[in-house]
Image (cartoon, rainbow, N blue to C red):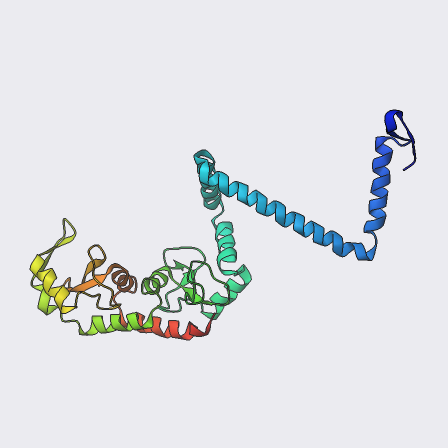
Length: 280
């Protein structure tokens, strides 16, 4: 850019600052218009956006972890937004966790005739008095956590069936043992030693009775075989007659409860899980 030499070797431009900016902008526009420049510009923009996004997210995570007031504010705003727009929140959760859009979900509901894949009770996107909220189930052998890659989604379930097979850890052998437990366990052997207090809502069980039950089960959960350590077991009983059946680990006891102690639902769960083994 033309100019003259000033005092002590300084350079004085003949252009003003505004003219210099306009000249540089014109040069940039001319270069950017070239076809070969587009790929370079896109690459620079992408790197810049990713770098800024990652840097911003890192700052927000650090502040969330160290600033109680900021953390409380974020939780409050998120909860309020979810309360005001539950459908938007659910849609975002489905997209982020399972990669499922509203169109795909509607198609899956139509294919299942708007019924749970295990118990065949009516399901819908909104909780009503006659229908359960739909739950998206995926193969945890492919994606063990609460998020799915999208390829291992097996189907749509009601909440109780989804929790039921979840407590059994999607284990077909454990569910088969659960069926055997419901069908063959002889409650007459131990029910006379156990009584139930409706007021306190707990079993009045003698140490001898628990010792007898534990020895009869080799101190293992009848269905999954886990060791019955203190704090990891529950007294299981027939919900119709109230008679005690045995001792199960907490997870298996919940699994039977969510599947309503029904051998038919347990068999249906096995068929459902085996059918979805190929997903993922």
